[in-house]
Figure 1 (spheres, helix red, strand yellow):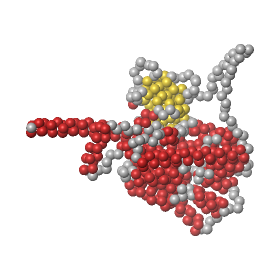
Figure 2: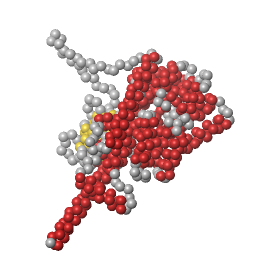
Figure 3: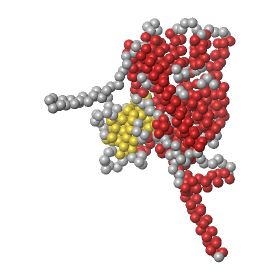
Amino acid sequence: MKKFFFFSLFFVLFFFFALASQSIVSVKLQELRFGILRDQLMNYELSSQTLRERLKQMFLSKDDYMSEVKVNILESGIMNSETEGLDLKMSWQDRFGLYVINSVRFLNFKPALELEEQQKTIIRLQFAFYMERTRKYPIASKKYQELEEAITSSLSDEMAFTLLHHGYCLVMMGEREKAFLKLTKAIDLFPGTHYAENASLLISFLEEGEKKKEELKNKKKSPEELAYSLFQSGDYEETLKTLESLPNLTKDQSYIKARAMEELGKTSNAVKEYIQLVKQKQNKEVAIRANRRLLLIGNFYQENKSLVAFSKEEANKLGDSKAAENIEEGKSLVLKPVIIEKVLKSETASNLSVEETKELNEIKENIRESLEDSKGETTKLAAVVSEEKIPLVAETPEVTLKTTEQSPPVVIKKQVSQTPLKLKVQLRDGREVVCDEVRIEGNLATLQLGSFGLNLPYDLVVSVQVSGDRSGNVKLITGSGTQTESSRWIQDSSGDWTKPKSIEAPVVRGEVKFFRL
């Protein structure tokens, strides 16, 4: 009996340890895969780079439209790709392995692994960053605060990102004391990182602005000088208040007023001011700057074809057509957000807790409100365009040619487009981007168009071919300089590149450096 008992015990222990070992390996592989995909999606270092450029533009070079276009392109590629690969499907074996791992970590006083919680954190971060990008700072700030309280690892990239970007949102909302606390915390927790560097940069800009503002007040300078200083320091609410106290505004002051309104999300009011400044003939420099803002708004922030057509025509009159071309070129590289469609289409899963279901519904409601606000602003903008007697641009209707028995069929010769050939890049989430060149560096693909580049995770690219109906071959260039041509290149499941219906050996992923025409 004892032998049977010991044999049974040995078998149970052997089975337990074998199952535990296999489960732990499975969980570790899940964690590794999740970590790689998360880093590719979030692209934290690139987010710091774009924030740094945004800060420089905000405090140093407010009218550098090229820099603003580049920031918009870069921001559209951050936290803005399909997260299907991050959807964890944990089996009972994975959950058992996670339980074993967390038990050991608990005994060693280490925080538990929370893979599913990290997945939810990424969705929240995507949403908060989208709200930040679209200037919905109060909603973004609220979500960042919730994230700060929910993230268990105080030294994670997610926490650093949250503190830094929450600080930025608070600055834009005028709550500078609260912003200072968030930014200081980011510096203290993450010394020597790009997060701390950007937090220090933002604090230095704020302190410099406050110092100049105090100097002007102590010297009892004029409201005109004070308004300009407030504008340069990013204090847009105070800028408007100061300008509204002046009886008459110069063209430069009217431009500053419009810029302050635009930054505060009062786009339609800003557009009305810009249009008046474009039409005036006394100050050509202000007219050019105002028209560039119209081009940026019409292309990026509140898309309006009539406004774009008007500003393009005015750019030609003002001798600034190159700016219009650059802005339109940059617009074609901006990716539309996937987080909106993903969240709105998501069904409330039965395995979610009451709190998680409540949060998901709240995010959906915030997105719907944001879209409604955007529609409202679009309607106001359309009203301003109509009031200013700007010619309306109608959508191009589809033309259908019909033949009858009485009339012979009309033979239409297909005209060959004179526009230069471009590459069309198909992304894994269905989006397409037209560019001149695709450059591969490690796990990053850079889609280059003129002066602008869009950085994306390499794995997000599905295929590369010639844009439009025109024929042509795409050159694949390896690190050794070898060139291979094909009408279309497809990235297979292993990451290597193949030609359609080809029996040739694929080009190994790591060897690919460029796609060019």
